[in-house]
Length: 153
Image (cartoon, rainbow, N blue to C red; front, side):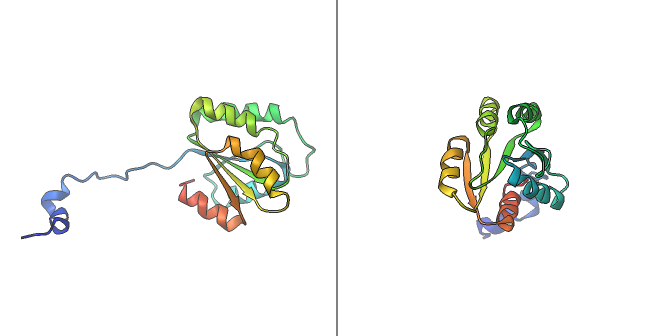
């Protein structure tokens, strides 16, 4: 008599298996919420060119841009997205987080926020907490990279 495990691996039972993976890759957007996070997001994107990244600032050297105008470009890109991953440095201001979060809420898109640990962590966490489905205090790039892989981003 065959055990249930042995029976499940027989050729007769194999015909009931689904011949493709049970999940699809996520269509995610990585967003730098502050100027300090722009370089970090660019490094994450360079490691995996298929990652879609958007920044509220053109580059780390640019003056603080109109976050609302740039956020509207991001909101337009949300129609093809099923996950938004925001990157913020602790102690930095993230003025567009609420605008992006409202747009994601309307579209039922979950938000994951990584706060990279520096100084003034508690203020940053309390500011971003209302907007995130998952808020993560990240100690460094390797941790963020591993979490993105786990999230299939």
